[in-house]
Length: 441
Ligand code: SAH
Ligand code: SF4
Ligand code: F3S
Image 1 (cartoon, helix red, strand yellow):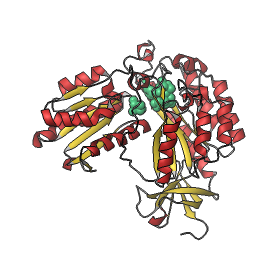
Image 2 (cartoon, protein in one colour):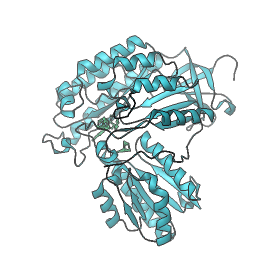
Image 3 (tube, rainbow, N blue to C red):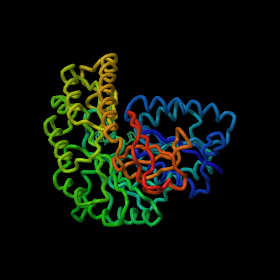
Image 4 (cartoon, helix red, strand yellow):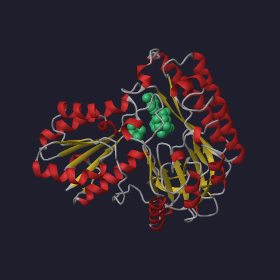
């Protein structure tokens, strides 16, 4: 029997889907990339913006039609979107044919749910409240790669930024025990993984509530000792990025000098409305400090355009911060009202055409900065961790620099999983091209 998983959303979901795959394989299924051959199709969903939800509903509709021709097909929908009880109910009443609906807190129960549905031949809706959600350890994971491995360190979020639905669907902050994390990282390194990505909605909060005192910086120091590899983390909150953490990074050579610090807005007034807990000035001071300590740092950010009440002046402040911070990359989003969040209730929602215009201006500025930062890399040699043949052009290899930038270069496939020195020969806005140095080609 074959199974197929489709994933929306962030790295947290990508890793959840690896665990989902592990649980399904334990029930005797084998993975396929081809949904038309699958006996079980799972959609693992995101609800951070309306667009993500609309895409999932479209896909469910499509699969239901397919199911009419293949009645034995089992359809499951889970994750953040269906963690919202009203959405789970909506899908179960309007989309007959979906066999299993589950949330984020009962992912570890998927194996049982699946065998129950196969036995009873009746649809199942099971969404848990966050209350009392314990961290399930020792779950199997069908990892999607052999070079980069995801490791959860903290679940949930307590920040309640006023626009964001994540705390409602991922629950309160829960840190994993450092021993469990270390054991998982060790295991991956033993298996030959070269890069570890630590995951959490706000990794800087790591350690709160654990019986033994440990901070995120302390965890990085501890993991840094485990070998020679690339250690990354996602996502950190600018408010909590303190000197102790910077010091820990400085003393941990395995930790990549790559900083993803979601700005969201450059206007202190809007930041306050967003409940972000920092100001334009404190954000810029942090960026300056990072460049001071790590002149080679690569910086990225997330920005929301058109938060309720955002004026032209507020938006121009965002452009100014972007100019000053000189991010290597920015993920930009149109504000999307989410039911149940305070910002969705705010009165002065920004008209769609104004949002679209600001979005285009921001993108234009950021593209120019990204290109100029990439151009500054030409002629220099970078260590590239080779991930395999390029997805867009199979005749070249693709890999990433420590700063997480993609580099394409001609070379043999056997280099996959190795670190090679590559000289950058050409820079574009989104990618770099190069050639191997030192006669390895
Ligand atoms: N925990 C992370 C990521 C949260 S979701 C963090 O705090 O940064 C990823 C990004 O989606 C956010 O950084 C934000 O830029 C964007 N986002 C969240 N809610 C949104 C909304 N309602 N509309 C538009 N973008 C949103
Ligand atoms: Fe959402 Fe804010 Fe938590 Fe990030 S820190 S997940 S943006 S509430
Ligand atoms: Fe989306 Fe859930 Fe991640 S809402 S962004 S998949 S935590």
